[in-house]
Image 1 (tube, helix red, strand yellow):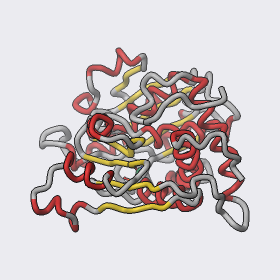
Image 2: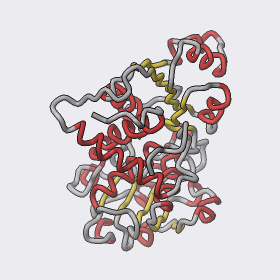
Image 3: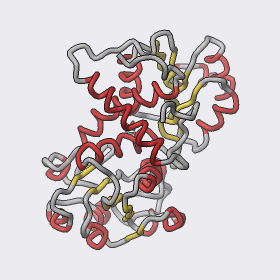
Image 4: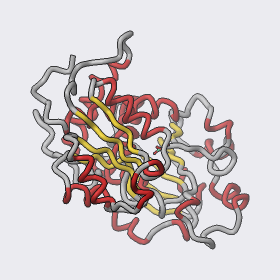
Length: 312
Ligand code: CP
């Protein structure tokens, strides 16, 4: 593949293995740039990118901003709480005004599923989904795939178990689409109230018994309870959730020998994962964050239309 065939990145659903591998291979080149003393290339010089975060974020927002700066793009961070959104301006009017200032790309996070797609309908710019509701978080899915491939040299044939609040998780959905496309075997596990019915249709194994789910797994991707997206009544108590679904040192004995612990963050220590496991040598949680910058550089570059230009 010579050119990524898309203008936008809205999700991993529908992407082929070849397309995903093209992004991951491009990210390998950018990771090498990030290991240089001067971590900057002129690849996107002259492009202007707006980061439009309508929802809280630490990792994704800073990672995108760093990726843009490392590529020499001009970046602008839009903060709804200090904007004319407070005066009643609609999302459509806001983004059309931003585009009138001659921008090239928009990175958007929003609590409502479908907002990135909506932006493709009202703007000419490339749109990158940085997480929309419980729908998708494609760059998180890609950085997770990158991290797995970096450790094992492959994704195909590995058994990956995603544990936690699957129902409200855009990370789970992007991971499932990406892992399936790359040939992994995927299982999800959580309380039945947090396991949506469409899971089996997505081709994954579904468990409510954590010990059964973990048996023979290579990778465990642990998810936070998305309490901000939950109405009441999904769980009896957090203590009960931790007892039944928390990833503890004792449970690690069920996994394959060369196992890996992942978490997209933010972590709620002592709820879905013990500090001992989160900080263990088998945890790649901070490696995921490091790889996120390289993966986002690759995505920005591939969607920018600058692919004829040299990386360095
Ligand atoms: N993983 C992730 O999306 O983290 P943030 O919400 O901090 O961006």
